[in-house]
Image (cartoon, rainbow, N blue to C red; front, side, top):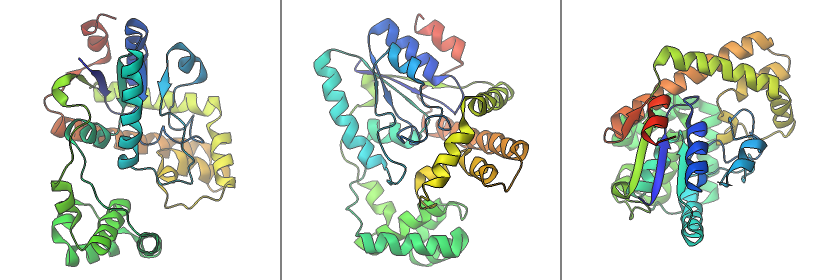
Length: 298
């Protein structure tokens, strides 16, 4: 076994399970969550706290500015280095996170889309901000119906990505995605677990965790990010819970309304994650947290 992979919806208990595995094996916990890479989003991304980080080695957490557009391709480049370092140290990598695309790219490979020129990237991002997802989806449907069929009009970030790739390369993103590179960690070499709590229980955990975030200083974190005047189209600015907390920090909504929206947004996101894991990770072990602890001998 070359690695342990722990996926699951937000608030399902992945970090606690990973920490227990790390303590038992002497392994290192490696981030596979697209929001926990951001330095300024410790609380609202539910990143491990300093006490947890002190109990086992943690890699690829909080090392990127929210001003950067982090990508799965960059994550793969960085994790390749981390995996080699851990191999040399004799440590078991324990990859944990809720970003299904990261695990898929790791175990199945990733298409090598060329770098997009800055001018093209900014052109489509600007149009996305000004015109919105539905308008850009209509453009994509005309120019690249295959990708338009795959994407929702309510997903402007991925629509912009499809349009910029099409303009920069002359090829559909679907064609690039069909051409994948080699897997860094073939699935057969890993212990793969999806935490799958019952939905009512998960909803309670989400609400309790957001209350804990508020108590831990989530509002101050949101205020600090709002003061940075970051481009709202950047991925970090779409972190679940951040927009409503910024709205409260700016005096636009009450704290109660911000909390309700954040909890509802998180629950919807968890449902989308669960759908992804059920459809794409059908051959992974699906366990509740208690079952996972028992099966791993923790």
